[in-house]
Image (cartoon, rainbow, N blue to C red; front, side, top):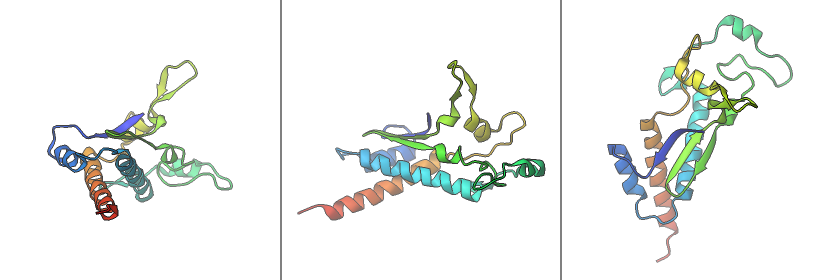
Amino acid sequence: MAILTLKTTGEKRLQRKFTSLAKGMKNRKPLFKGIGVELINEIGRTFKSQTWEGTHWIDIKPATKASRRRGEGVGSPQILIDTSTLRNSFDVEATNNQVRVGSPLFLRKKDTGKVVENYGEIHEKGLGNVPQRRMIPSLKRGLEIAIEQARNFTRKNISKAKL
C-alpha cells in the first residue's frame, strides 16, 4: 500500500534534517500521523488543482468528458475525478518511526489474488496510452511537509510544557 514513506532514518540531507527534528521525542506517532494527514491534504490539493508541484495534468479527451457518468451526484468532467474513488482511497499508516501514505488502488487484485491492474500507478507513471498525471508528492515535497509539521508539532508541545 505504501506509495510515499518517510522514516526517521536515511542518508539524504533533508532526511537528516528531519531526523534531527524528530530525535529525542519518545512518542513520535502523533507527529507522523500529523505528517500523514498533511500529505493526504497535499494529494487532495493536487486533485483539486489538477496540478502536481507546478505541472498541470494533461487534459482528458473531449470524448472521455462526454462519456462520463451522468446522474445525481455521480460523474465529473475533471481529470481522474469521475467517481472520486481514487482521490478518496488514500490513507495514512503511522508508527513511532515512519509514516506511509498510499492507496490500495495502486495494487488492485482480483479474487484470484493475482495483480491485474495497478490503477493508481497507471496514472501516476503514465503507462500505455494513459498520460502521466502524478498525484503523490515527491520525496522532496514530502520531506518539506514533514519538516514543517515537525516544527509546528515541536512549537505546540513546547508551549504546553509545564515548568
